[in-house]
Length: 578
Image (tube, rainbow, N blue to C red; front, side, top):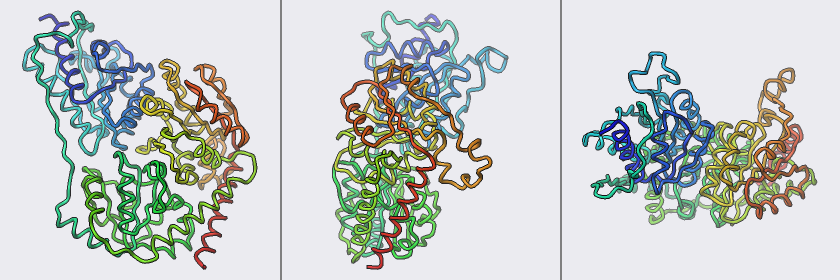
């Protein structure tokens, strides 16, 4: 068997097994050393491929697909620094538990550490940010080595999908010549025996005695359910039923899905961040028990409040993860959330008197203050952007949310809606990089798709817009342009005026209309409330990439937020004294 025939058989066996194990899509970064894998992936009749020339963008594009589809996605690049550009997306995938299968081509062993071009140490490149790393063997055509290639195809998907999900890395040393044999296609040849590994998954459950003890401890207690970012499908209704059964409120992060899953329910508290900023509220409303599902919510006031409590705290987190930044957990429960919620809704509980109703009353009062505050004036403030977006998002749409101020404003200003809106964000490492590319990746799965992002984050990833132009992807981007790092105006750094603008404000003075023109996007610059409403309505009927740039003022934005919090604080204090 020739070198090319051997390489073709070995790599096609690996690729076929990836697909049989559940891989449907791959994102390819062009390069020379990865040629045989790229060509064989393109040749496969069922694998959908996307080609992204910027490796950093490609990593996040794949992340967005995997995040929205909940399926494993393959990333492929050549040797050298190309692989290093995947690092931010790999770190995000690890921390947000997203299944990525990263394939890096490499020089063969005889060209390592000898000064060969485009060669660097790629072994353990991603460190402990991947669940597994394999330096694959040089391709051979023996039956044993073909089984080896297939085995690693199945194994990599299995590891990526096991709870907690995450990325894996396989490094492929390849010798020249690098062109595989495509005629006849290695994936359509008849007469071949095709035995594929079938992978079965189970869900972690608790013993009945542990369930009975937990439910007994919860019965009649004044408790709260905290719903952070959740990766499982269709948990919203089960969480609501559980809260109703216990007589507890749900403090719902926007990424929990509970604010926008198609129904409204009064057990869902969407103004908890504003309420918990008030010391009078914290003093008056003290729980006896806390149960958290999902990752930690974005709200800082919630974190501070939880740190102040000395109560029984359950964290329900399947797998081996230990996500407790508060360090207040008393009971870490590693089991499937759906199993626990189904068991909980079938149990009987005593309901604490006047507990849930107080939360509901104060939440409604805070909603009224927020609604009234949003109607003041016609000039656009950043909170109003979220409020208007909530009203104008179509049903069954997706909203990708940028980090820094956008996710915090969504937490504050996005009240419950009876529309079904799937919210996504990169809340693992919480970086402002790669957000455009991740949203574009998600747009291949969810439609219509919107992105709310700050100007610095948008600038960070403008290269990613090429994928929208190349594949005619549909995405409406709302760029909140406050000319710099708006979040720092809320932080202690704002108290150092001598260096604030140069080190933190970081004004760029960019006009994003030029980026829109470069990538053939629709574009509107907005400064008034009515114009934003009109722009969103028009974007709903416009295909392709649309950029709505909303100009705001950082100083006015801080004042607007502070005025809202002061109004809410006064209203909460009035409500508590009634």
